[in-house]
Length: 129
Image (cartoon, helix red, strand yellow):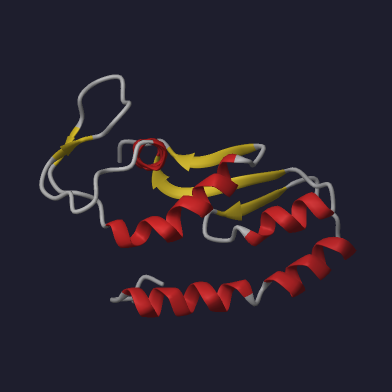
């Protein structure tokens, strides 16, 4: 994934990862874990965990700040054709971002975030470094 240079290639990798659902579900049925930690980009694990009554934690390599900003933008969308600097809505302080987030990623990220927020908790990057 680190070698991906365009959205189409990233989408192909995402689609390929969904092919793991059946073998992962079969494995988890045979070797029941106490919980499942699943990457943010594998929303189908939520259905597998719920079906098998196994707690699920969402892993996200983004920073906690990024995750909070994504949720804020999901709840308070930017006006269409917005460009340039903007203030992240609904934050405790005015945080100005130098450029508008790419809106083409919104249809992909919003459902993933919604599913991740239904998990039993997050394992997330909260380090400055």
